[in-house]
Image: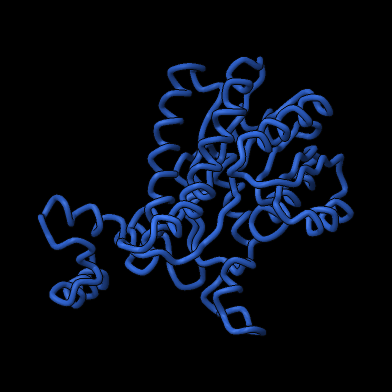
Length: 283
């Protein structure tokens, strides 16, 4: 753990987490509470938030509302600073997944973009100026997705939103380095296949956790170890996809442009077998 991170993920300091009532957000909240941090939690599900509060052994502020609503995020910051007078880490975790293809109704797209990208952007707009002005080290963690990096076909709106989060977080990291000299940092958390309510909802009712998936707790353990080492890209494996496989998939996707292959060649009928052979080959 770096000295700077040791002063951020520290007893008595405050973590603000969006989408904190379940899944990855809740697992992060529990892990940070176990390290003695105070919590400010936002979620649209009021009842789930109330249930969460009783399970966390730390001073916890709960705010219910929509992460895509700027007034909700302003209220979250106001109440957090009024109660705690500090923000050490902002975790932009809230997200949704609803299918929308390249020529679907823009109305279907808008909600995806508003929550998955707009919520992150709005939270940065509200919280980052405070983090810059404050005298203490702090960090912003944005939840990305592998679908925003290799952009597989099938859920274009989600991939577009998560690709935007990746670019936004890279830009934020660079701007914060120039503005604060590294006192405030940004980090991109990219989960592997994680068994969360979002993914469970895509399965038949009562489906068992697949062998390929990690639990949210496994993901958070990996995430915290990498965060404490100051990593920017925190790309998580799972029980089926190793970090080496992730690296090869990312390299192949980048080479589509460099080698002028067809778009998304990994799934193109003329290139699928070539990709599979390349993935298995020694490098």
